[in-house]
Image 1: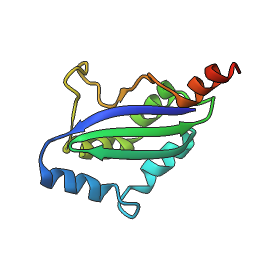
Image 2: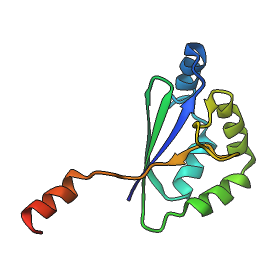
Image 3: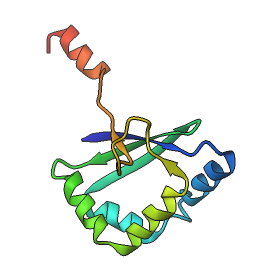
Image 4: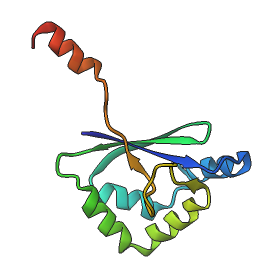
Length: 120
C-alpha cells in the first residue's frame, strides 16, 4: 500500500538547504531509520517543490499509523529528531493544532481508469 502526506517547510532558502542536508543518507539518524523499518515501512521518499514537501510511504497491509505514532512518542531519539526537523517545518495552512504531516487523498489513478475502460 502506498500512502502520501504533505507538509511545508519554512520559506527560507538556508533552512531548506539545511533540511535537505539532514536528509542525505549519511546524515539521517540510524534510530529514525530503525523506527521506520520496525513500524513496517518498506520504503519512504520525500519530494520537494518550493517549500512544499510530499512524503511517500510504501507499507504492508498490517501497517498502522496509530501504532507508529505511539511507538515514536515513546522513542526519545525519534522525538529529538522530530523536534530538530520542526525547526525547518511549518504546518499546512489548514492543519489542525499539533498536526504536521497531513494525509493526502488520492483523486485519480490511471490504473483504475484503464480497468474501467477495459471492463476489467
